[in-house]
Image 1 (tube, one colour):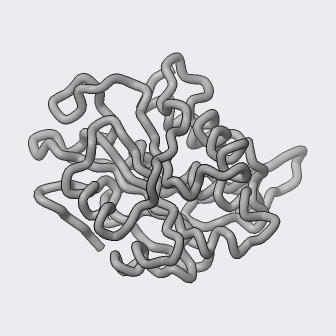
Image 2 (tube, rainbow, N blue to C red):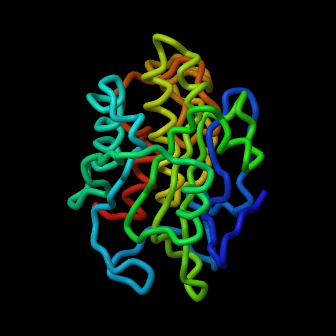
Length: 247
């Protein structure tokens, strides 16, 4: 599947995390990165498509400005991506005064503001459905936007779509599902591809590939046991982050 709006390139296109079904990206993976023009796709600053500087502004829908999300889940996700870097990738969370609609999402995608990621809390599934994304199985989608056709590997802005109904259907575990999903989708926006689950060992005992201990942050399926809110990136993904964005 591929979307385009006025020569806008999406990197990756509709790459997300699923509960029971896998929604593939149409981009090619240069493991563990999205590759374009023979190079890993990543954010650029002080460039033709993004005159801003690091860190990136992340703006959340107004509906996400509630205690169970803003107190620990969202700040924890930002901290996990900023950890270990000399210069943070993300600013502290910002919250819009309004919620996204199909119209506003389309407007954003036609002319995405540089150095900004908009996080959409799809309250009724209408935005997912508009783009043909299954609302019954896909938790979220991460999109990196490129606006410079001569440098398709450069990411200048982005968007995350989150499936409110599916995330909240997990009741007392909804905070864990939001944490893992947002962490994963921001990884796509930063240029990371889907990864495979390892088969790590601990004290000589095999760890199953669907336990949270061995499932990378960028694995495309929700693990059987969701990591706790505040969990660090998997070591594989932390290493990929440092390759793209330095120490």
